[in-house]
Amino acid sequence: MRPPLVLDMDGSVLPLPGEYRPPLPWAWSETLRFGCGAKTFRRASAVLTRLIPPYQAHGPVLMGSGDFHHLSWPLILRCLEQTETPVRVVVLDNHPDSMAFPWGVHCGSWIGRMAMDPRVSEVHVVGVTSEDLGGAHAWEHDLRAVKAGKATYWSAGVDVGWAHRRGLGERFRSFADTGALTAAFSRYLGDDPAPTYLSIDKDVFAPDVVRTNWDQGRMTAGQGLDIVAALNGRLVGADITGEVSLHRYRTWWKRWLSRMDGQTEEPSAEIVARWQRENHTFNLELVQALQAAWRA
Image (cartoon, rainbow, N blue to C red; front, side, top):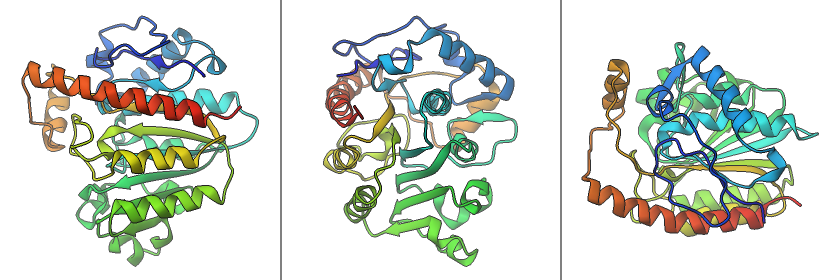
């Protein structure tokens, strides 16, 4: 079994059996959290890849809060550099993470540009129930990857009629509930043995599974594990975000954007500690399932 790698961005990932946890600059929690400029992102990505062990030496990567989900991008690039064939990327997420953000990269904007890498065969964002994918937010999306036929969104209970009216309906697959979505996507995976990188943002799960910093979806733990099982023998890389941590931004634009995204709840330290313990229990289950699905 490949040991987990913990990138301790915010102190929210509790110790895991056999883990490797390299020292990281704590200043990154403010600098990279939620978003940053393109130059800062490139510099941090380069430092990150120097600090962590070779790709073949570890298994799933845990990165803390979903506020750091854009760090999946350099991890995916690192995986692509060491695989001989194009890789499919699957992202379990309650949000599309495809918003246009011309000033740099943030946790809700990274997928569109990552998908355009020629070494990425296709990207599937699975489990979206957020209205970020609805018609009222259609103007916010970077649709280049969708129009190029490289990105597909699998949502439940979201009206994506706007995409159909634009002739993009094939790339926006909507289902009545997450059960139907999971069954359809698992069948899709069963028909295609492509090597796959899986990125899991735990906000895709219902609040009775785990709690996160973001508004959450409706997927059950069993449905998420079914998708992992459908990738058995095909997984070439994986990461997990969606831990709970408290942070008050010093940067005004991050305070403003986080409020715009609904990050206004500040639970007590005692509640955060309890949620972190619950996340830890689920992390143990996810890591074990991911390790079992890894390609030999």
